[in-house]
Length: 226
Image 1: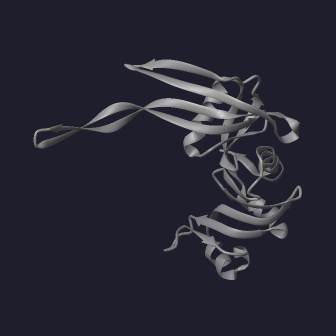
Image 2: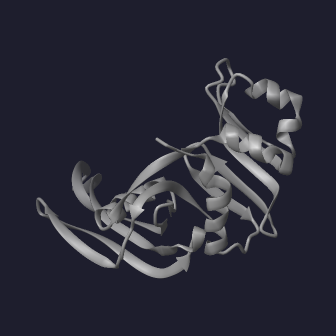
Image 3: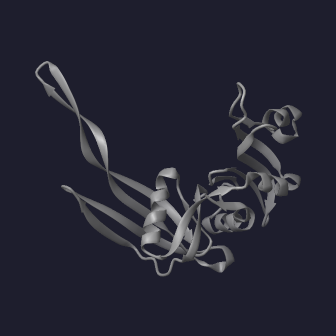
């Protein structure tokens, strides 16, 4: 994984194991599962869980029936399966693929001794601490007011441009792109949002252990629980 939605983990995950469980809802049988694929070394040399989570849920879907020269439509309940890759570090943080994958936080909670909370990133403090040692290639803003209420700017050293500073001075930064950041012998380029999404673009061959240690050392200090 080189990207995902972050959550903070409080407590010991314990011996999380692969499983499939099933429950009944009306005429439907709904399953959920954890598939542990590997244990890797996370921040502070902690045993970290890497795998997949899946759940089935009921949705309302359109159904169509052809009858002679007419088409009849109706809504019916159908099962939908959602799958997400995940990584979980005990007492530190967890990561799922995207916002649809946050159901995995609940499944891990329900089968361990931990709680997992969505977080927000304090982008202002992150920017203050990294700005002298990196470049900013992206900045997103919102709540500006006026005609340009929100948007995303791209470029090279975008925050060195006075017109950019003027544009975002009365707004809230909601995403930040950082490049040229030196970390453990690597040059990092990544984007991160206030809502807790991170994606690393460079180095392109960063592995899971390096990715997790980067988050633990460079990003985790700026977590804020929602």
